Length: 155
Ligand code: CO
Image (cartoon, rainbow, N blue to C red; front, top):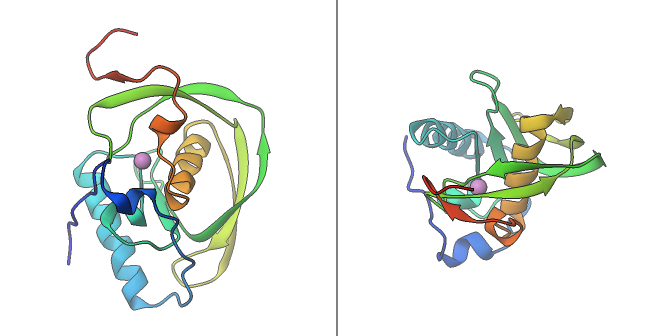
């Protein structure tokens, strides 16, 4: 397949709760591959399945180039600390804002072969995981941000 269309704010699909993945099969792996390609094409640091129109609980984060983190049916099992950082979203192009997120998280789920995985993340990776997790609940960062503004505008 390859590149997929990114749903943009205003599309109902972004406001729905995604369902669990019941079987981790080749179709799921193909969607993940397409999601990564689509995310990289748009210079994103994360992408969730509903952003490409698929209401399934999975997302990808690449907080640092080459550090690809994929997770299926994620659960955030620990959160620690808090800080406020700048966020944007491929589904809300050109808009940025500050969002409060945990500093450190622990997340549990399945990898692309259906094996259980647990990951601890800090800083940008933790933020991105929380941001993508929200997409699975139909929540966008603009719902939480305190000072939304367009790219290029001063703080
Ligand atoms: Co987003």
